[in-house]
Length: 138
Image 1 (tube, rainbow, N blue to C red):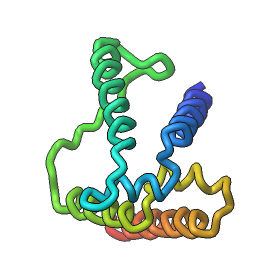
Image 2 (cartoon, helix red, strand yellow):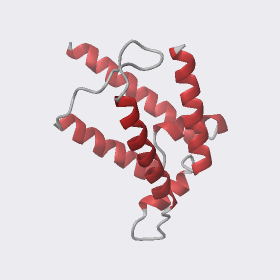
Image 3 (cartoon, rainbow, N blue to C red):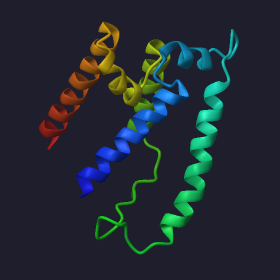
């Protein structure tokens, strides 16, 4: 059941990305172009997401456990360290250059556009390299 809920959540997320225009790299780079022809539409998408999460998280935190699991798995790490800051910088730089981030990139794979295939392929290779380096570090 957890996998079905995960799949349905992913489908709903993908539909939301398509409806909001977040899968269009031009829309995203237009939003990031603060000093040029700024496109403010994605601010409403993010604002809606923040408001929805503020409301639902308050309701969820009151529950003893999730519907399809015995316990919640809340994040425990709260400190800001060098890896977090460096990762955020790399992520933001990639987002700004490509105009796309991982979620919309994966949704865009269905278009078979070479730029999206290269993006998701590169992201996958980067994740494999990270996994490999984590195994070596242990």
